[in-house]
Amino acid sequence: MKRIAVALIVVGVIAVGLFAGRRVMGLASGKGKREVPVQLTMQDGVCRVKAPVEDLGGAWKNKIRWNATNVDCDTPQYVASLEYHERIDGVLDEAEHVVDPDPAYSKQIARTASDTVDGKIDKFNWNPFRDKTYKYKICVGPDPNPSTNCLDPDVDVWPY
Image (tube, rainbow, N blue to C red; front, side, top):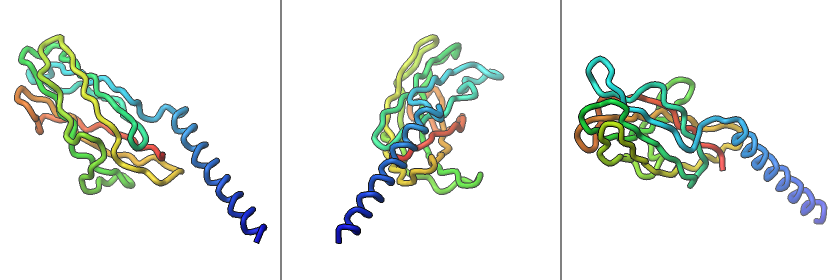
């Protein structure tokens, strides 16, 4: 009976060690940032999100932030982050609820002004050996709640 208890404790310590080690390696690897800049610029006569937007990243319940700046678009713009699709072997899966709020909207952003859009990772990643990567859209437009004129960066959900 004591051997079973010792074995269970050893297995538990190894599991916690792997989990903690993966978290430290994930944080140290620099994959995905908790804050990313989003710049709006005029491109071919249209206000667009300037590519690339760095990958976001975080574990379940961690805060994330988009720092949106209207660099040179004359018309005030709105920014939306929406439609999260897990990327599995290069193929996009069905849309899922990954970030809260979803969609996340900015306030109106005038030329040379900025706004921060706060959210949190709302997806639990139980796999301690790999991040889940999701494609999502950052859309921009002169009307609230834009859903066209989009760029598709990544968000990594780290194991927690």
